[in-house]
Image 1 (cartoon, protein in one colour):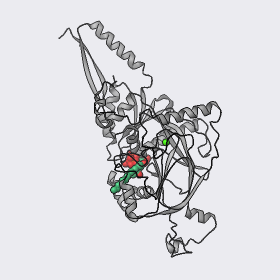
Image 2 (cartoon, helix red, strand yellow):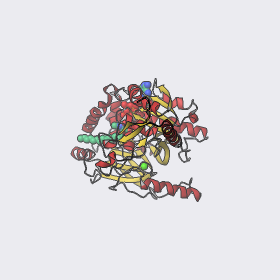
Image 3 (cartoon, protein in one colour):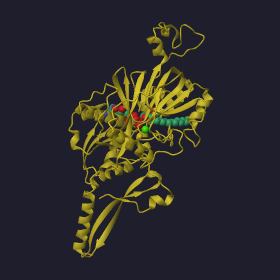
Length: 465
Ligand SMILES: Nc1ncnc2c1ncn2[C@@H]1O[C@H](COP(=O)(O)OP(=O)(O)OP(=O)(O)O)[C@@H](O)[C@H]1O
Ligand SMILES: CCCCCCCCCCCCC/C=C/[C@@H](O)[C@H](CO)NC(C)=O
Ligand SMILES: [Ca+2]
């Protein structure tokens, strides 16, 4: 055997349910020169892949989800990064907003990507840091809702270690740290729409997954007090919120998305290489060429007043293990629009039927009390605030709790809910929301289509190192 020469190739193998695994194969050769030629050719091939990251900045939330972030990174991710010759500067966060603040201080431009190890809240923090830093460096004021924002070319990677991990699930198709690490290594790129949320010309937050008022806002508010329960807190608070069956009055105004190709009732979902997202980008490029890029079109607004159990705006399907098809199964990752779902006051039984349809194949929008619109902009004002603004004082909040003092028998509901913005609460109930097309990029490629079971065993494997 002493005359044999060898080299080992590490590559990615597709497994079931969108899982990727790292495999290896060793090649033997009696000719040393031939062996070296192969090694050289493979090295050159790898070097020519310019989209692959070489240097990453990694933030680990040690307290997200089941508190496994550090272990997951050290045992499952770091060895793969080493194998692929990626160097990583690792920051283990010590408090909330540590990562966000740090992104304003470090030289982010020396990195090919920022990786967050944690859940949706940790991703949100890193995204806020990155978007905020890019706007600051570009001299853009985030408080002006009309200002076009500078796009972030530095990609964000998500290693799932949270409680819901919906952003990872909806962009990769599985919550699996090894799969996500491999998507980072091969340098995948998935643009993502981001909604900016303002109140009275003050910037509040950005959202990429769920911006929810009513049901999901109340779940979040209650669950925050039960963080010690870990991911279970959402089930507990979900049950409690369902039983409370609270509805909220207010006005939703929105501009329907024109120029986007799909509809929220489509049967087709956003998948790798989605033609609807691609067409949106082409349309935007064309508008840029004609100089229409930064003009805000004052299209007509649709106004809906009502009593709502839930108002959900989603920039993506929001698929997660609890709901594998998500809150809006046909929503697109990068089409410059959000799906606005209005669930009006209905009986508890009907609301339960609506929720259950998130978990099976039935259409959750096929109810008379549910409306869904594809929008580019929307606003919400609660009745409470409208009444205050129109100088109808004495809502009797102190004496009569949350009910109108003028008509105690009519039960006008003046309660306010909280907005759930990607798992974080917002300080204001009145919001103005704009979808920013493809503002950030992820190390992902959208959910891959497996045409048949044989496909994941096919020859479409990728070279790792
Ligand atoms: N060291 C830390 N101590 C306390 N909080 C932290 C720390 N690092 C980050 N955070 C905050 O913890 C919040 C929640 O974290 P994360 O999203 O990782 O977990 P999760 O809430 O369990 O998961 P999910 O968001 O998927 O439901 C984030 O908003 C982040 O700002
Ligand atoms: C019989 C009851 C069926 C319940 C079906 C519920 C469907 C659940 C859908 C959950 C979608 C969650 C969207 C993601 C939100 C995240 O941003 C956030 C933070 O991680 N998570 C939550 C729970 O607010
Ligand atoms: Ca979208």
